[in-house]
Length: 201
Image (tube, rainbow, N blue to C red; front, side, top):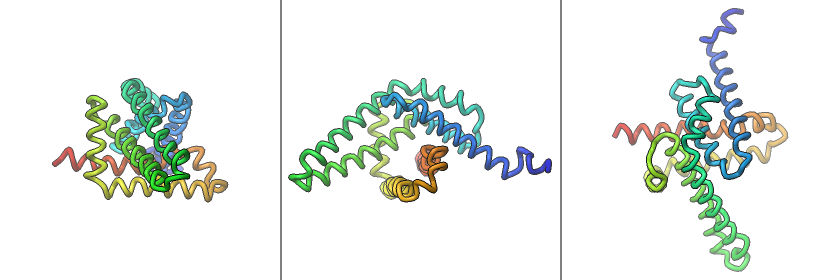
């Protein structure tokens, strides 16, 4: 019985990580209520996830809010730019798309491209320190340089959303407890491997 509750037990370690992901998910949701801090919350989450994957999953609360405060200015601007980009894409889809089908396609493509740029930005800002302009330029370069991974990340997100919609009643508890951190953890693993390739080259 003692071995079952031993912190070194693989089962207990797994449960501890799941609990940390649940706790982190709650922090992200609570700090995203002012819509302009959504990007800040996701960047702080990314910072914590990188730490967890590297073996440091202690002090989730303290680590999250340290990253939240540190990246607040850049990520608020990032969120604002992303929302403007989504509005521009939505305008093409719903205002002009009914008349010009090509513009509807462009609108969807623009929103998709903007989303993947922001995903890379979140990971880059959480891991490196420089100006937002340099972060944005690096994000654009990485999206192109690692196109297969970019496509894989987008496919993962689309698949996750579709599965959640189709099986919402069954997956509701999982979505409520791990809806943000579960897919983000997988994306962070992909990003970490990519960053290590660049850092070691």
